[in-house]
Image 1 (spheres, rainbow, N blue to C red):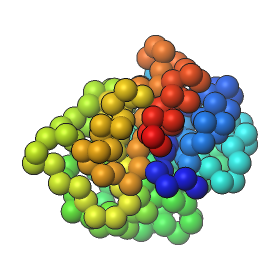
Image 2: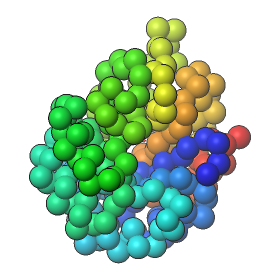
Image 3: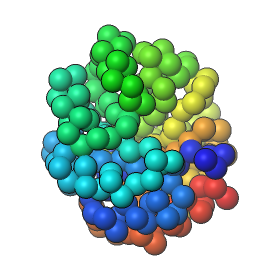
Image 4: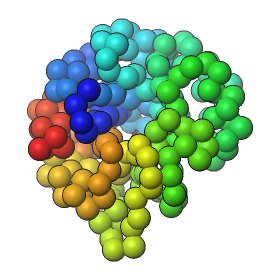
Length: 199
Ligand SMILES: O=C(O)c1ccccc1N[C@@H]1O[C@H](COP(=O)(O)O)[C@@H](O)[C@H]1O
């Protein structure tokens, strides 16, 4: 794994997945949250995940779904990680821990350190995830949490270096910023993002 952890999210097609893997992504995300232009079903995610080498983490993305639903989608798709964007608490992370998946906790709130809820990775995101809108990560009162955390929300090939310099994030996660139109990924932008992020 390269030093900076890079996750490319919201993949829906085989060329998207192949582009992310070829570009050197450490993780790829499949959105199971309903109502997104990027939502895929478990069978599609299973086919896409089968293209991904073991060195790249496959992640299912959820928002406000029950632990039972998260578990079912994860099992049916075979993803190795789950990313939760809802109001889950430590008990939910503990319940999911048993299956041995990598747990990502996404939040727009201020957090002191990664792992407070039992997550493996923390994701600091915009209040409206997947919107492509940046939040105030560059502001003077932003304080980075301790531990392994990913910055997300409105990143793109043009601003990711500046975002990393401002925050010192351990990794980055992107969806809208590597799309040519909403919900449609661009292999060129995926490549440009990974290159820019790694400098
Ligand atoms: O992408 C979505 O539509 C989505 C839906 C529900 C929960 C999370 C979603 N995406 C996550 O949002 C961030 C980054 O978004 P963006 O780059 O600003 O578009 C990323 O963590 C995605 O996993």
